[in-house]
Image (cartoon, rainbow, N blue to C red; front, side):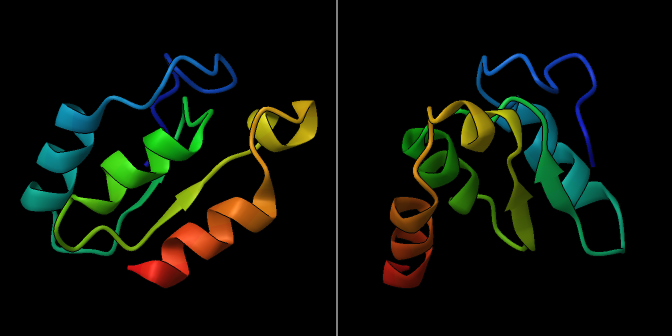
Length: 76
């Protein structure tokens, strides 16, 4: 699920809307749109049954370190 109002904006994901999406559909959901820092990933990791997170601009711009993000998810 890509929140197009936040995609590429690096303003943080809409956690509430993402949680509702995951709860209300019967298919796997991967979050996308607005992820710009490790804290965003931490917050998304709290959503039960969320399958994954996509980040683009934050990686390309250097705002988010891929190695740190991978380490964070492995700690969970």
